[in-house]
Image (spheres, rainbow, N blue to C red):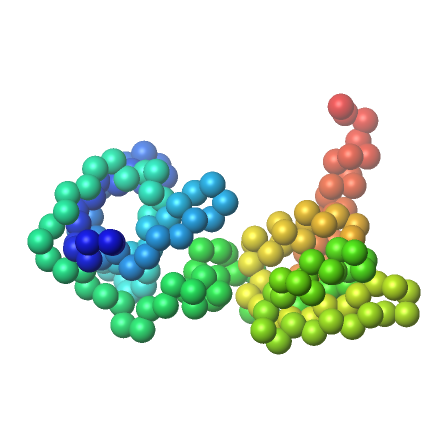
Length: 176
């Protein structure tokens, strides 16, 4: 990527199969403990970017040719659009109610450019934002436990409720 060259890599897929690729690197990102190479490869059947977990790369041979660039590719936009994540819902308008100390974090680091914040009569805070509702957003919200309530979209609220009920069932059972 730094040399702006195509390269041949031997890569181990999830199932254990190894395969050689001629790679056109577009960027590198890290998500939690895993770094990913965002790229296309020669002979790719479908258009689009592929994510290769860097720890699965076995060998690299730098080639003399320049990589084929994806027109208009912007890594920041790719990530904002959920490029590394699984989108859960077509709806993009998220409405949450936080306790005030927890909501302060979102006042300092907004979820989106259009985020709005309103204090409620009971002291909690309603936060609305237009975002891609992904699996990571769900896990992040679950980490707040009883300090946040998903209001909208209804399908996401129902999903969170089902997860919370499953957790209650798990913790209510007599097994230790």
